[in-house]
Image (cartoon, rainbow, N blue to C red; front, side, top):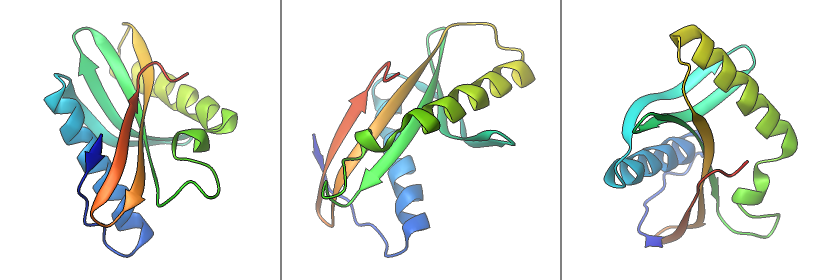
Length: 123
């Protein structure tokens, strides 16, 4: 899927815009928004969504190009482990005892066109 993005110049702004775009896309797909940028000592989760009775923990990755590896490939085993630990913290803190999954939204490109890929059950 190609999308038109007008990213700002600094890295943090690009990340926030990518997260906003990913959230809007997931809402259009029928998911409901619960929380963004959930932080705990173990790590951070970009988006937490709900799909019926399933919690969806979403990692959003943006890359200008694939020269040093693509957006989805940048979710390393180490990052996955941090996401698992942070998700467990979230579930315990909020008293959730229901199914959960980890999705990745990978955005690649710059300026006027980017490719957008939603990987469900990524790990």
